Image (cartoon, rainbow, N blue to C red; front, side, top):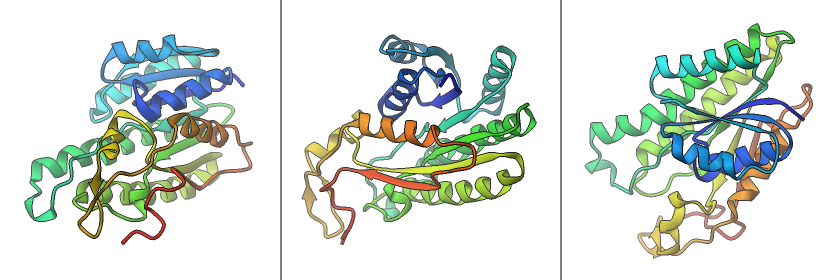
Length: 247
């Protein structure tokens, strides 16, 4: 397709899977993350397209601005942003949660999401031809929380509001915005699930996971929609994970 794409958090996990899926479809993909080495590892795994690693801190407005300035200077436009960078926190009861733990999660999962979406929106609005697509990484926690997950769950509920607002405000400019809510993709972040994680009834239970490449294919599907169509929300999850029927 040779779309011009940006994937944040592209050095591992879901971001890497999405970037490789887009690259495999022939796209030019800017691979963004804090450290260059894992981005270069992602680039080396590509089977097509053009991979361009770029270091950036999504919580820093200046760093985000420099990244988008580079894309504008080198390519003149941006067609797709997969707004993926995020962190999770260990399970901690709300009564024991500290301000620092709250802010650490929100700074990446919400502030970083806003900074990248805002820069992408303006670029897509102002470029010619106008328009583009923003895909925000939500979570099944945007629907139902896990025990001890207040910062993460709150951030993902906020991402849903952000997605809806961008989708509405983008209509006049051809900027589509959708959200992918992912459950138990097999990444380093979810490895703990193979040993057991807290359930709503207080039990510890091993949870099934799915191949992270299935998420990559989902992002490619969303990115490949024509300009007059949009996947507003999609949930992709391990078939037998305890999400439907939680509690």
